[in-house]
Length: 485
Image 1: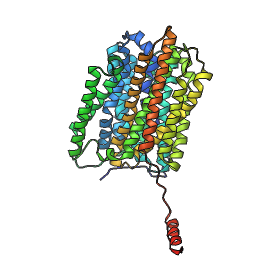
Image 2: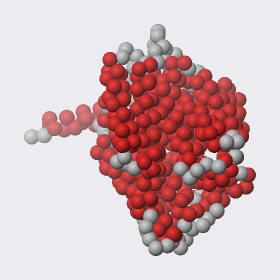
Image 3: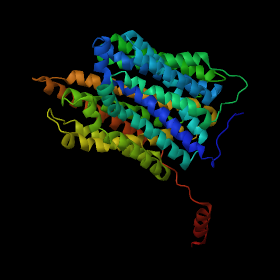
Image 4: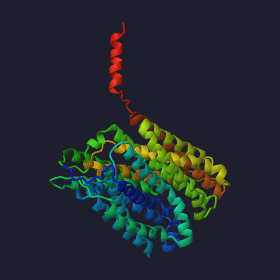
């Protein structure tokens, strides 16, 4: 039995509800990266060490990535609108605490709470979207706007973070969330309808929740610390081994549980599993490229955060265009061609940037790549989302949304760790700027490799659309064959 209150197809409020959900998704993804440009100012203001400043990002990514599956499950059982509003309230309060933090420890703790709230908001918002729009062209269009808002958030952090830091101070990269959270809280009861999975017993699968969360936290922690500790260090390999062990315990638990946190039927589908792998690799390439572009623009070209943000406005706008065009193509051709094309554009953009010089110019060295990168990310994001969520029933929509969101976010953490390691290991040369440029060239090469691996996975794992022959055509073909001599 399912307690659902989907909006009728004729209810125009569903499009206003979509706008609200996209704003929430945008803010969640934005917050994962907006602090990149503000980190130097935060470190100076609160006295962070060079290594400690990374925890402003890592604390958010750890709690966000680690609790996404549990957040989606809670929404399925307790009511999606209720859980979404609870997460939004916590997101606003933690953002206020982040901006008001007077010490490094308070800011890191507040960022961890902010990550928890995001882990509740993101999968719940996507689950509400799935239960508001019926599967088909209309849902594909809604997912295009959702993916576009996520792609825009991942790249717009470079646009918004710079001006806020330069003009108002680093605190406003957090204060920005407060009025948005208030608006979402006011509008949610008006635009969103409550829905939940109706079951006789509400089991949260505590063992599954603990092992899944532990595996994700261990994996994310190993990845974000790998550039400093070393990929082959005892800490990194030990944490990754722990993540694998916990994942195996989780799978064994889920196979025996009467009410599993993640129904294994979701993971047995080659298309769903393949789509989430593609989303993971897209997140790695997207976040890795954005991070490296920021470091190159400010560290080598000497641009201010404001200058860099304005120069890169073409990238988030391109992501929106790519998302909308991608959903139309998915409806006609299926997800695989769109995902392959988007990742090909992303890989080509990264390859163009592998030759950036010390005295690079925007029009000559950056713009051609940005014109490919934005649309490529947008198109692949919507294709991956549609493939990962196609055929998911209402009762599993929350956890399926959590898996898809976790794939993108953990991929992002992995991508940043990979490009950081590539930069550090290849920063060599006689002069400081030349050495930094060599490191960033290696980082862009790593992004190209990630995108090409994603392209290969999309081609191999995403199914081509089946062309259905209308019954009348089939009958005519059979008749034609019978009358032939």
